[in-house]
Length: 343
Image (cartoon, rainbow, N blue to C red; front, side):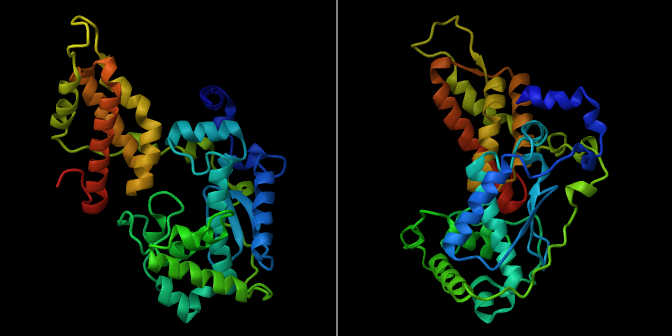
C-alpha cells in the first residue's frame, strides 16, 4: 500500500488533472460490487428506481436526482492507498464497506425519486428535510431512536440521513431488523414504515429520474496535489494540559517485578503511532469524533509522549493499549458533546 502511494509522489501523476487519469467504474473492483447491489435491490423489490453510478470526489446523491457518486479513489488500489496515507481513513475500505455506503446512498436516491420527504408520515418519522444541514453534529451514542449502519451514529446527523440509514438497514441481506431492533421501538417503527413504503412503491414509477452529475471525475480539472492540499493531519491546535494524562498512563507501566530492571522500555510514541489507524476508525464509529480530528489528536499525543520520554514494559502492552484507548475515547466524547477536549 505504501509503495503504491509513493508511486504518485515520484511521478507526474501527482500534478495531472484528475480528469486525465482515465478513471472509470468499468473493469474495476467496483463493477462486481455494483452488480451485487443491484441484485440486492431486485430481491427487495426495488426495481423501478434506476440509479446512475459515477465517480466523483466523495459519496453522495445530488438532491432531486438518482445519480449516485462514488469516490474516485476507490477505482484503483494505488489511489485508495494514497487516500489512506493522506487522510488516514477510507470510506469503503473493502467490499463489505463499499456495499454499506452504496445501500445508504440508494436510500437517498429512493427518497428523491419518489419525493418521500414530502409525505406527512415521512416527516412524522424522520423530521423535515428542510432542517439545516451542517457537517458538525453531536450524536447521542446508542440512542434507541435511530438505526446504526454507517459509523459515527450517522443517522442522527439530519432527517435525510436518518431515512437513508434506515433504508440501508432494511435493505441489508440476512439482517433480521425486527429482532435486531426489537428493544428499540422508535427505530423499529421507522424500519416498519420503510418496509410498508417500499411495498407500496414496488410497482410505481418514480417521479424523479434525473441523473445530473455533480463534479463527475471526467470534469475535475484540478490535480491530486490540489485535492489533498489541505492535509487534515497538519491542522488543529491541541489544548495545554494533556501531558498529565499521558504521565498517568505510562508512569504506572514501567518496570515491575516481572521485568528485568535494566530492560529498555518500549517507546510510548511508537505504540501510539501503531494504534493510529484502528483508533481513528473505531473512535469515529462509537463516538462520532471525526477521523481527521482523531489523527491530529493522536499525532500530538505521540509527539508529546516522545518529548516526555514515556515508555512501558513490553509485558504490559495490553494494559497500555486499553488505558490509552480509553483516554482518547474520553477526550473524543468531550469534543463531540462540548466542542473542546478539556471542559
